[in-house]
Amino acid sequence: PLEDAKALVIKLLQRNFRKLIISTPNVTFNQFYPTMSSVFRHDDHHFEMDRKEFQQFITECMAEVGGQFNVRNFGVGDQVADISMAQACIITKE
Image (cartoon, rainbow, N blue to C red; front, top):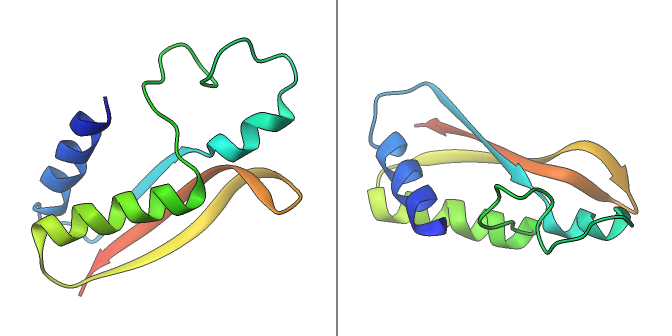
């Protein structure tokens, strides 16, 4: 569930790390899968976010922890109409 994912990211942000890479499917890309039979791309998914939701999720997690972080957001995988299959970010501590 999303609450568990948020708790995990917050826990990781509190650790001593150099780089943290987080990725998730981009729900906006699902429109290019014409044979999808469910809301989510895979049966084991509890949530999928679009690019803006993902960036907001990461921002909220960092705000919970405080401190100085740098974030680089980027698309992952195939792209159609400037929409990537997945999105990711690399978080570094300042």
